[in-house]
Amino acid sequence: MLLRRAARRASPRVAATSPRVGATSTRVARRLLSDDTSALVSRKRDGLGMALSWTLQGRSLSDERRLRLSRFRALAPGARRSHLVSLYRAYDVLETRLDAEVADAAPDDDGLSEFSSLFGVAGAFWREHGDALRRTPLLAKALEVDHGREVPDDEPMAAWSPAERQVARRVNASATLNGDLLLGHAVVFHVLDAALAGGADDERLLGLSPTSSAAAPSFEVSLAAVDALGEDIDDDVYTAITIETTRALRLRTALHLEPKGLLRGAALGGLRYASAWVQQQARPSAPET
Image (cartoon, rainbow, N blue to C red):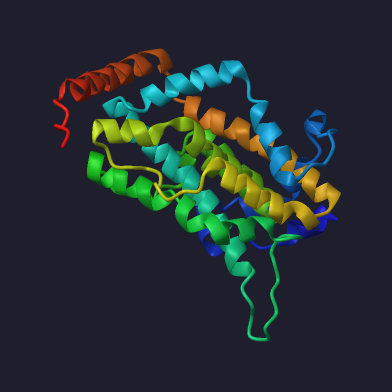
């Protein structure tokens, strides 16, 4: 049933950045649900939000330790610029696809709606929380304000790093097969990333432009919304979204860990963070009234 959606056309913007997706989407789509069958969830179906929560908790401890180091590396001046560019490319592809899910669900002239996905859960989630979770404009502003670099919109995908291309290809393949799968990517890249990175506090301490919105819903609120959306979906789509979430986790890890020099970059970023923290502590507090 899922493979019948493989002929869905790509949106013009995404097709422009990924010219090969049309030629390879069917082959990629047929592999999308055939790998890693060990990731199938055998626990009681308590709800889609709960299933994704358990999936997120299955992260590798080794990866989490390295991701904590990458958090500090992203604060080093040179590393932060390339990190923002990498995030911008990944989030631009994902948010463009999520926007397309919302647009495809809009009524046409006859008052009818046609989701590009089977159940439209990704589009419904993004319609409700997309404005607060959207990161592409903030990443672009941070690049311009903090580093004097404009958004790299005109760069071909061939110039992207391997991890960036992997994110784009998986997101495009998921949207082509069944847009519901994009919900797993949104939960990982928008909900989980904001909850775990601690980037907002780091940026505030260092006086950097924010790359995530303070109005973003909490992790619990977002998963409650996912739970409500998943009540009526079929079991195969439920399982497919859970599997896709594990893949999105791997993509997120690769994206954050890809640049070389993790330990050196983390040391430089950690020194910058520590210096800013000491200066903050040394400031006299405002007198109580």
